[in-house]
Amino acid sequence: VSNMDVDVAIIGAGPSGAIAASLLRQQGHQVVVIEKQHFPRFSIGESLLPCCMQFLEQAGMLDAVNQAGFQFKNGAAFQHQGRYTTFDFTDKFTPGPGTTFQVQRADFDKLLADTAISQGVEIRFGHQVDAIDLTHNPRLTVTNDQGAQYQVNAKFVLDASGFGRVLPRLLNLEQPSNLPPRSAIFTHIEDNIRDPHFDRNKILISVHPQHKDIWYWLIPFSNNRCSIGVVAEPHLLEHLSGSLEQQLLAVINEEPELKKLLSNANIVQPCATLKGYSANVTTLATNKFALLGNAGEFLDPVFSSGVTIAMQSASMAVACLHKQLNGQTVDWDSEYSAPLMQGVNTFRTYVQAWYDGRFQDVIFYQQADNKIKQMICSILAGYAWDMSNPFVKESERRLNTIVELCQEPKPNVA
Ligand code: FAD
Image 1: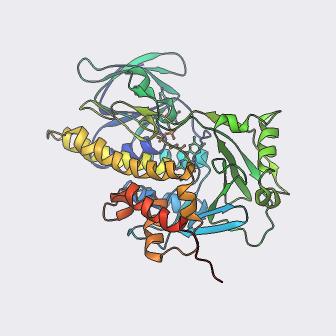
Image 2 (image 1 turned 90 degrees about the vertical axis):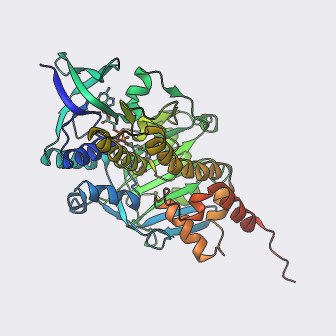
Image 3 (image 1 turned 90 degrees about the horizontal axis):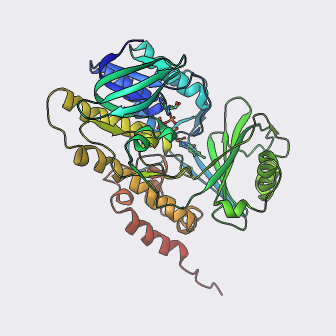
């Protein structure tokens, strides 16, 4: 295998890598994607947000996704102790797409990668990045499936390696998350849901009846199957015993609505677990590399923001990179890291408020003002970078104002 020279080397062919490669290719840059696995391969992260449809469109991938037969999604539903509430993503403050899909990521990620290839992108599957040398221009050491090693010399590297976190590990950029470690147990089921009120067009988030910081996702697919998972701090799951499957079934049975809904369900895939997935870094980008998606910071799965942040970061990084490759100077801190983090921090506000219960009070508040609900809906639909939304611009202050309103004691009606 011979060494190669490219403009941009991308590590990983998940959503952030595929979108970045496609956008760079459109602009005439020479790119190679190094992907250690062979697709299709399983990935968690199956409920998309409408905001990410914009990036699929930019990358010329929207038609392929629209035609793939994935489950239509138009919102999110939440339930806790008999209370049920929905957010309709088409009724939101920020302009832009209001619907999206719930996708089996093995198929979705392969579709994006195949579309990028059809646009002229080279993806090397079964090749793994093992080392990086930044002394001059970036140089990656890559090992293929047969054990052969070669070098890729690039003007710039995009790290789209997700939970692989290749550059944070190799360059010592890792920093602990400010969120406590949580774990998830999940699988796919044949759901056999017969309840006519069950809305397959929405992700259903159920809150544990006793512990408000244990929650479940139920993500319907288009083939009578769902993704199901539970998230909690590990000590709250310590009482569960047996195999992962037994633990998952036991904790589902602690939530009466979910238990009833899934009474005819069968597990069709081995259960899996992920622990301590929240992560952060000291540096998101320099003039030699940028971290995309999960390779940078990963917060929490509760608002399904992962793929949206991955695609948003790809689009922002490519805009900066296009400038730099054309000879202009880019200040990666102020032009990439800061604007990207502004949206990530908006999600952080809501993630923290979800777990301490404040945002759950807002979600289940029945008399919400419609304009305010639309602004919150925009964020849940992924539009966390829209600075014209007061709940983005001043997320903590605005959220606390509305929390007070929702928690106000009801006047006694004699
Ligand atoms: P990935 O999709 O992870 O792709 C990274 C690729 O890099 C992989 O294919 C991998 O093989 C490759 N790679 C890794 N190391 C190397 C290497 N050394 N060399 C070459 N290639 C390498 N997000 C949502 O949007 N919706 C959800 O409902 C959702 N649910 C989640 C539930 C849980 C429990 C968790 C933990 C996360 C969830 N997420 C969700 C987040 C989502 O999984 C990620 O944000 C998303 O997959 C990130 O995409 P990516 O392109 O950054 O990386």
